Length: 80
Image (cartoon, rainbow, N blue to C red; front, top):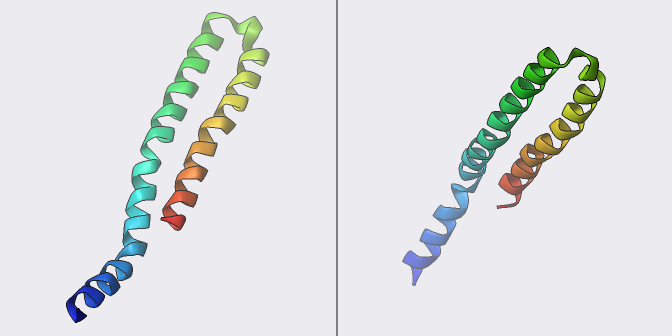
């Protein structure tokens, strides 16, 4: 019976490290997404310079949505 209680206490002590690892893994997706998003926006602005204003506006809106995924990842890392 005491072994089970010690095992539970030991797993709770490792929880902060697992949250940091989880956040590190959770930022891989948004990091790749932001890179692709910025690259494609620059490419489209080079092809059609007259649409640069609309493209950059749309890019910044999408950038905020992608960045929200990273923030959700850090919150999930702290909760779990």
